[in-house]
Length: 544
Image (tube, rainbow, N blue to C red):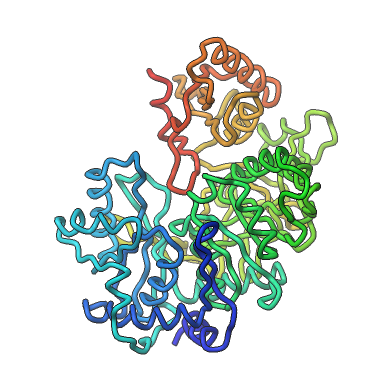
């Protein structure tokens, strides 16, 4: 038996910790032992439809109460889980069904498990010849024992945020899961007895799926899990649950902390209690230091310790974590000279007024090593800016694509992350941006995150909804445009003001001028299923 599944089943037999779902209306708590017994019955149902070791399963469900036992049941059969992209009310179901069929063919899924609120998709999928079983049907199965598993077995095929037309899935093994789990546990000094995890993160994204479902199910940690829709309807619910359950560890992308900071600033004294929180991870998208400062200020009235705010770095290819600050560090900024950064690819410390403040993302987690290389593959010293590469037992062996399997590592085991960054002298990781997104202007490397941060500072721009769009200016020169969202998009005067102020803010903060600014309504900027900006798909926003 793999260490991952062996520990999961052993945990279920002894722990009194578990999973709380259904907040805020119908709170429901199950121990991991309860979930294991349910998973045994569901595993019997999967066996009845021919699910054996090495088979791939797609799961389409919205509720953690369904997803947890469905995943464990799949692993009990020695199969792999792929969380399928979820349709929204705006989704064209015909297009979604076609894209889903492409994914199912790509991973060679033998069946799809459906749970609420997606049960209605069953006939749509069956019409395409896909074997479908519902969570409710599986719960009626006969309890069976798990099959043997090996460290090299694929446990998760995590869909990445590539275009829907050419999907790709990161293959995560049982060894990957186990290694990364303890890398995170050891770094943050996680206590199974004392720590309580609170999450609204989508379980089709690696941060939610791995960090706030798989790891606690493996080791027996207490976790309170609500859905992204629950959070978006009432953002302050996130904070309320941390107070209600004594939450100590949570995580979210930067935009969610920006939203939470604004809600806390408006809340009455005593509305929530954040005094128990010791880790608020900020990851999955670029970290804005100003957001962390705003959250620290707004949270102070509610007992939030600013040292709990922790920018982190992770990716699906390393199972989840790459670097995490040590406990009680808080946000640590690195101030560098922007001219050296952009022109010389060196992160030279600076105390000048125009110094660029970059969030450090902690040190590499245990059992994972990293290095920075230039475009020729030469290893760079501390503060040399280049491509981040990582190596270790948590790194995926490869990808499954529509064209077959593709390895992720080179001959020496190094993974090219596609991220540009550097290490400080102390070994702290700093990420500047994605290689493919860097804008080159007059010999300068201009990072879209800097442009987006400046544009997002303009009053009226929706937090997390500004995108820098690289444009080809001809003769190997590049320029860029900026698109932002605002609730006042139907007010011509307000639109003109935002256009002017976005230009001014970008020029003032970054020293470059956008060729154009597009001011749009909410929901216009394309994003991935996990909320990341799709910069490459944003050119159409300009209307020409």
